Image 1 (cartoon, rainbow, N blue to C red):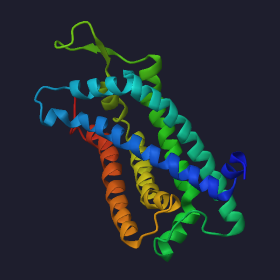
Image 2 (image 1 turned 60 degrees about the vertical axis):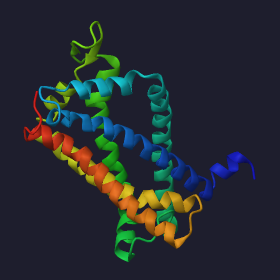
Image 3 (image 1 turned 90 degrees about the vertical axis):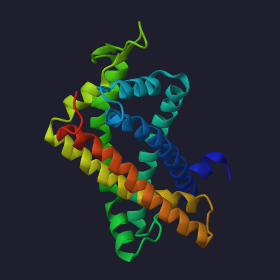
Length: 236
């Protein structure tokens, strides 16, 4: 079988979904770690967003993350396209597709709602990119300087974040997006490893527990950003 034929086959599409999904999970770990810097003020009195802005600057300006960012963006597009292709095919054949057993009700609900969850996550990301990524890459953000780095300017993403998250509808959209992300990750985490050949029950049980814990913690941390800003837990 030619490579082109393999990657357009059902097995190939599932493999692509798994690889791109795991790559995006790695990106989520880096991204949520940087985002967590918004709470640095709790540990560093008088911080006022300095740690967050410097961490975001590193993520946006360092060569390796920038190169990975391009690759991950392509992975994200491929992941979405392949996901919808599999969703359409699964519906047409009334099969379980690449979904795995999560209990009869959970699995059935997920299969029926995968397209909806994917759409909600996509809308969440579109808003996130429009609010933060585009201004940080193409201008439109205020610049700040810090005494320990004279002559270097940083995007004031912390202030932008506080401003954006004063809109309750944006906050609600982020929360809905994070809930959708959590459910998607709970399914996708261990499903990806199954597709890559992990079949040992002991390992699958561990992956399932790890996936649930990871999905809840990461999604909760993402959701706490807009909630913290809106409720005034973090301020300028």
